Figure 1: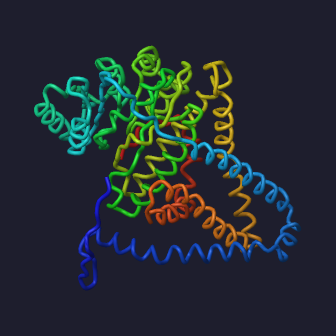
Figure 2: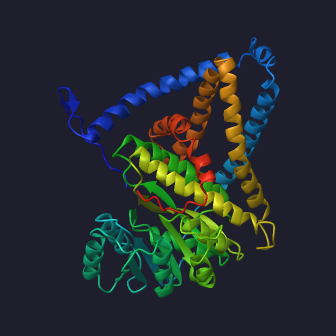
Figure 3: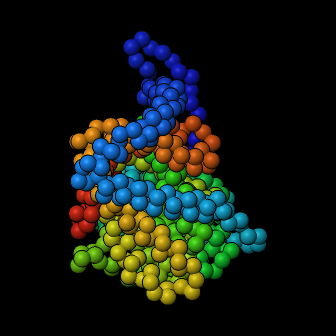
Length: 454
């Protein structure tokens, strides 16, 4: 859902609208960032000459561990990145099988979403799906704003298509989804967040893998940013999402182990959900109800039954992302706490015979991902220590970061074919300075189950 830019209008002293300011920034960045990357490349080449650099560092007590750790960590991550790239290159979306389509239930849980929920509902109602085979269940999870007004209005507009449910009080997203799973009549469930809009072909496309392969129990959709042109942060996240959601899930899909089918858009086989529904609803963590990360948790429950989980690039959803730093930190705290918790759950079954084949690469993926967390922060600690004694180390690091980030942006450009990759480069530096604290803090506060909504 790309928005077309308008012609810039100059008003003395300012741009007329925030959109015009972003457009002006976009033009400036298209000039400055390539030049910056070229300087980084030259700096990396220059600083890469070991004239006295290693000699000086070798005199420090920590130098050898730093160099060994840095080199080992880099080769480990880049090596597995090469493996993921190989899988990513081989990935293809499942084609839609010919023949009659089965009944499908679309479930949209909502809480204090306001007018955006109506857009989500209407996007589902506009799906190119056979009449009589699609039902939409919308659950108002005890909203305190006007969310119910928009749900009720949509239901009155499409009374034969939409079923509206209203909880008297807030029960949590799990309960909203569970109500849809229990009442849904479809053979497949499609879940959509209430701040997300799907494309007309999405419902067809996201069930295609399950129609083609009975082993597939869960499918992850292709998540893009709905509000990408409303702020600089949203534009950076739009690039980040392509790398996090498309590149990672396309590679994981090749061995049938997409670790998380996202709340923004996923599909599930009914026969994979109902047997574990009550266990998922009443899941606990360290004795407390597990009310965050319901999407990753549901994926784990389905995987350990022996089903596979895959990614369908052609099933597209556009979701609203935070436009403020505070909102972004809350989102990442939810995600990181959920990932730590569910990684532990994954560890409890990944060495069992939970399925007959394709168990090797999920194990490799898991351990590379998990070891990346402690090694990253150990390396950063040694990096700052070396900077204290030899400041040129940090210059070299940031030059190298620019060059490596540019390599990563290849994946974005290969998929999207636009200049927006520039914002991904900005994001890498932004994340280094402003977001490195989030993951350790999430790990230290795992018991905190506050939803932290935007």
